[in-house]
Each structure stands twice: as C-alpha cells, then as structure tokens.
Length: 102
Image (tube, rainbow, N blue to C red; front, top):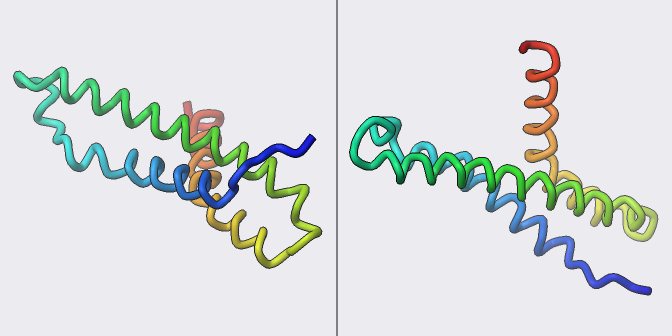
C-alpha cells in the first residue's frame, strides 16, 4: 500500500510554523502579560507551544518518510533533511538543556 505524503509541502508547513513560533513573542509584547490584554498574551504563549509541537511532529514524520527514499536520489533528499534541520537542532538543544541543566 502506497502512502501519499508530500514531503516538500509538510517541510514547508513545519518550517513556517517553527518561524512563526519564534516571531510571535516579538509581536505580542511582554507588557500585555500584566495589563488588560493578558488573555491575548496567554493565547499567544499557548500558540507558540502548539506551533513548536506541531513543527516537531511534522519534522519527525518528514524524516521518517525521507530516510527510506535516500537511496533513490541522494542529493534531493539530503537537501530536504537539511530543510528539517533547524527544528531538529532546536529540539535537540532544548532536550539537552532540560536533561543537563535543570
């Protein structure tokens, strides 16, 4: 059974969510936390966590679908793995930080 999975599309979505999660705290300032807009600040924090989680899930899924195809066209799929690298590096750095520095 062939699974229809568009690696490029989900890589683009994963990276877009990852960058959005990095930029959202810059858009919604910390001063909202203690003002009348604290609900907006709380929603933005939850959105950041959700975006990072979805990006990590899609990255793991992408890599799981890319690895079996590397033998077909190495150059094409190595580039796709490099496109997934920022999210992978971020989660690796976060895991090391949590494991060793908390």
